[in-house]
Length: 304
Image (cartoon, rainbow, N blue to C red; front, side):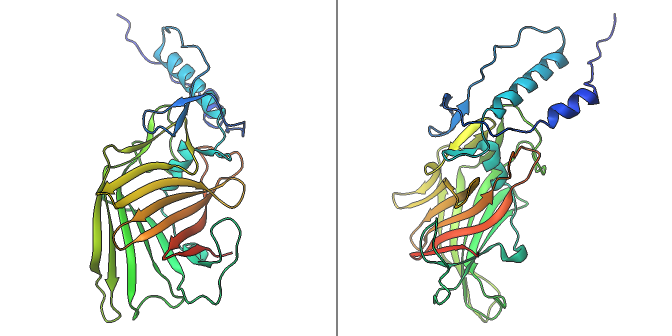
């Protein structure tokens, strides 16, 4: 009996296929509701189902081409929202303080517009986003000084959320078909406010809250995530909660990934701002613009 040997795709076929860019076409209006979240929509395929093929690799190639074409119909970002793969990328990036990009200064008003309050008594804030080795997304914001924090009383708020990347920590993501999970955030999270005195190196807990949700939050390929809506919520009782939102930025093709923190001691909006390059696709990266926060009734924005 002749042994079956699957045919490999020629590099001449595979290379241009995977390098297809996503043209900025209009955001689809004929989307269907996602299973993950009522506000998130999923692009419906306009192609007929592929017929029975005698070759597995031929059917796989056909499915991949159809999936890429469907995704190309959705702009990476529009005035209504951002594509799921773009948001997943923003949540999986570790920010750094190169050129002071993690620093937010007191600002005259909520975005957009405004100007820095150079004579404000409020100290600038630093927002750090980190992917921990134990599979958690960590967000820390604290006061910032030009000469560092050593020898100063310091208070910080730390939030950690379980994060799963089914396709690994590739930079950038590998291509996955529509409907596949790109990223998920777990059901258990916590927020802790802690202090460190000037004469000490250790932080002490002031207050902490363990927050839960009934289901995990999933981002799937092909979804459109709307702006200005609560995408997911973790709660503890009627008054403590953590909410995930996507908000527009100040400029075209700019958006913010925000966590609204509400506990007994901490009330604040904590955001990282991202710029989507023109004709962005999964082979590209995002540009980290900087943080935006609302803390203690004061607006803080990345430095101009």
